[in-house]
Length: 192
Image (tube, rainbow, N blue to C red; front, top):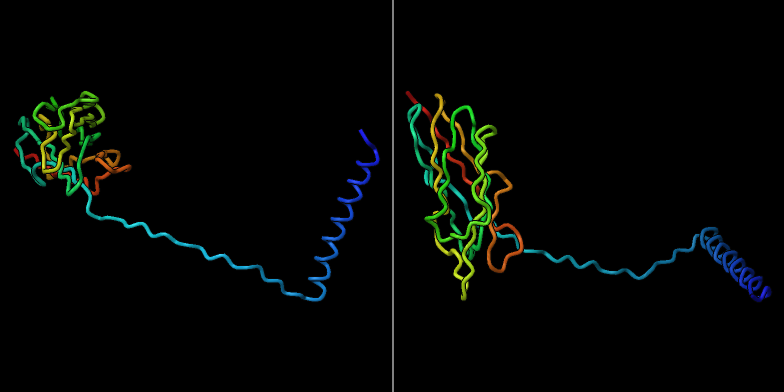
């Protein structure tokens, strides 16, 4: 190790720092205005499409009797997208309804990636379905039924929503994010 090189390096660093401080002092003392070249920010606007796919129940409103067994079809409207799968999470009021079964076999999305999980204690149902792997791929491009819920009403209500949780999403060819723009609930009234 050469001691002289280290001293020289330290002196060089010290003089450089003093020089920079001196320049800064002169600029501030004489109020010299230095303007650096301005860089223009380019703002890239991403087009946001309000029209996305819609997941919904067959009716917006339904009336049933206390103790009645009834079914609710779950549909998807691609609205121009090529749907390849969907993860569905449904919430309902456990005081008014129970879910007895979820049928997934009458749908173009016949590949079941997660069998239905029914939790009547918390009022939740979830399942995941997709289109089968084929060549060529045949996505869902028209309104389609994806499931049928068999339910039972438990007590009177003037209207209780059965709705899709915000975690419900759909995938589509050429899309990297959720393509659902709407998750439409159904209001079910239970009468005597």
